[in-house]
View 1 (tube, helix red, strand yellow):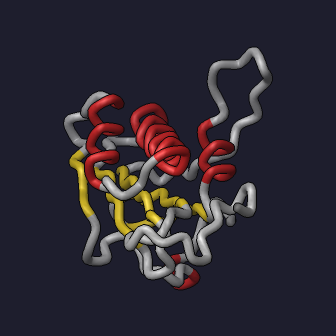
View 2 (cartoon, one colour):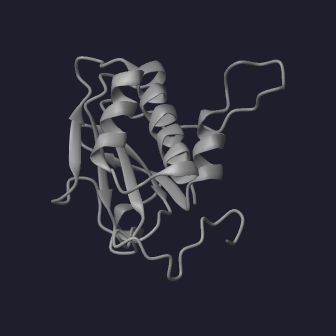
Length: 155
C-alpha cells in the first residue's frame, strides 16, 4: 500500500466513520497505558495476533508523538473484512516515510514494522492534518478460524 492513500480508494471507509473505540492522545498518555487500553478494547484478540496488533499501535502512536504535530486520537475498529483498523490522527501534514536503519540503529524501523505486520496501511490527509491507518488481520470475532490467515505464514 502506498504512503498516501486517497480516501476514495479505501474500501472500508475513512477516518471519521462511525464505530470503533477512541483514545484521546492530546494529553500524551504513556505508551504502556496506550497498549493496555488497546488490549482491553479488543479482548477477543490474543496471542501472537495481539502482540502484532500492539506493536502496530505502539509504533503508530510513537511516530505521532515523535514526528506528528499535536497527536489527537487513536481509534480501533473492526472492518467489514474482519480486520482491526488502527487509526492515529494528528495535526501534521507531513507523511510517514519508511526509514532505513542498520542493525546497530535504535530508530527508523517504525513504518517498516507497520508495513510488515499489517495487511495494508496508508495516510489520509484532511483539513486538520492527517490520519495514518493500518489494518491487521485477526481471527473472526465469533472465535472460528474459518478463512483466517495471518498473512505472513499462511496458517
